[in-house]
Length: 258
Image (cartoon, rainbow, N blue to C red; front, side, top):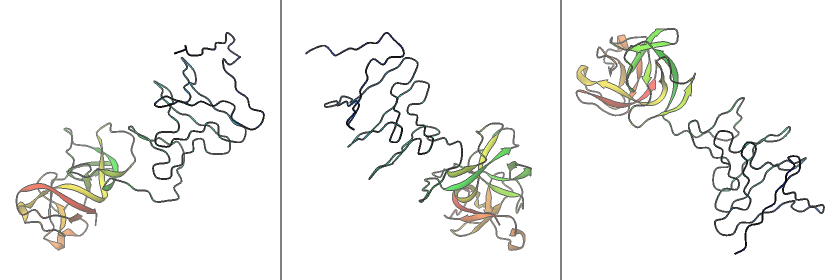
């Protein structure tokens, strides 16, 4: 087997490899057989691979079963796209995701986001961050009441009209949308305001059936059946989606504050 071809340039302004096609074909083409890569670019301090185009794609990749373009970076951007008039990064797929991101967060956008199709979310509720005044933290599923501007605390009174929602994330449900999210700091936690969430319920004040209206209870952080319709107006947390005959437990609830 022959040694790989090595081309070096001692002038930083002159590329080690330059490809040009004056007839309209590819300026540089790379093909890797088997599991090899077609083109690999490595840089110690700058861009590994850069593509520039006056009217077409700056960098274009096609994959039959794998990824068309892969970018790996230790501290910078794995793949970066810039455009003065078109899409900075464009992804298209026949059967999979046009653009796929993994991480926390998997995507970050500075500016508006426009969606022309459906937005499908795996989470169960719409939550919003509130500052929690309780000193020792609050468990997910706890019923919360308003404690001031942008502040909530654990509920402890029956039929409390200050009821604000349930701390999101208990059981098998996670928030689908989180509003006013600036990171979980200063005791801030997401509160489920609409949708499905698991909630702490105490059936000591009456058994709960599917479809029963729930309100705050004397048990801290727990809901109970709203048996007194005269006191329930303005203090309803939502509807139970499963029964709880006795004791306390987590119950899936359709949050609907009324």
